Image (cartoon, rainbow, N blue to C red; front, side, top):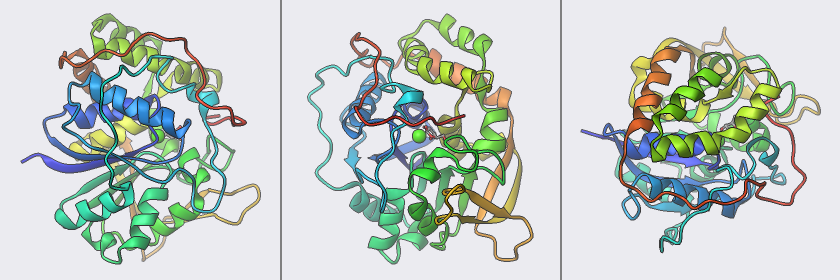
Length: 334
Ligand code: BDR
Ligand code: CA
C-alpha cells in the first residue's frame, strides 16, 4: 500500500527535486503539496511547484494548496541569493491548472484527520503551516503519523547565520510550537552534520546526472545551478540535497544508518543565536529522532535512477535565469 504523504514546501531548487520524489516514487501516495513562505517569492514558488508537477506528468492528480505567505511573527526573509528563482529561469507553461480553494492549513488538518496515525508529512520549508495546523486543531498533533522536518543543525553550524539553519531561522516561533506540540514521531533531517556530509552532489555527480539527458535530468541541472554555485562558493564542495533526502527518508527509512533520540529546543529570543536548535542528548523527555547518517551513495544512485525516468510530462519553457523577488536578499547556506 502506498504511504499517504504531504510535502510542505517553499518550492525552489531542491524542493522541486523533493517533489519529484513524492510525485514519481510508487511507494508514495502524495495527497497534497502545501505551500509555505520561504526560499523565493510566494507566487514564484507556486509556479515552480506547478512546473514540477507538470514535468512529472501528474497535473490534476495532486492538489496544490496555498498556505502562509509570512512567518508567524516576523517578516519573510528571501533566500533568492542562494537559489535565484529556484528553477534557473525556466518558465511554467500555460497549463490551465490553479491551486485548490482550500487553505493549506485546513488541508493539513483535514488530511491528518482522514488518515489518522498513518499520514507522513515532510516539511521542507519554514514550519509556519505546520504550527498553524497545531494551533487550529487540538487533535492535529495526535492525528499525524510521522512528521519529517528538514531543519536545524545538531549543536553545529548554521547556514543563514553561524548559529541557525534557514528553515528554522525564518520562523523560529513556528518551529518552537511544532517541536513542543507532542507529535508522537518527529524525525529531524539536519543541515549539519547530516546533509552537508551525506547529501552533497559534487561536480562529478552533477555530470552523471547531466549525462542522462532526460527531461528530468535537464531540469535538475538547470534548476540546481544557482544553488550549486552558491554552495561551492561557501565551501560545501557541491550542492546539498537536504529536501529530496527528507522525502526519500519518509518512503525508505532504511536509508538511515545512524539515528538518535534528543530533546530539541529552539532559540526564539537570542540576538546572535535566533533560530538555533539546541539538541539535549541527556534528556529523559525526548521529542525528536535525529537522523545522523545515511547511505549517501545509495541516495545519489536513487536520484540518478529517478531522473532517468521519462514520465511524459510537459517540459518547462526557456527563460532567462533570474531572481524572483525584489526584497533584500540574505545569504543562506554559508
Ligand atoms: C533549507 O533551506 C532552503 O533554502 C532549502 O530549500 C532547505 O529546505 C536548507 O537550509
Ligand atoms: Ca526547502
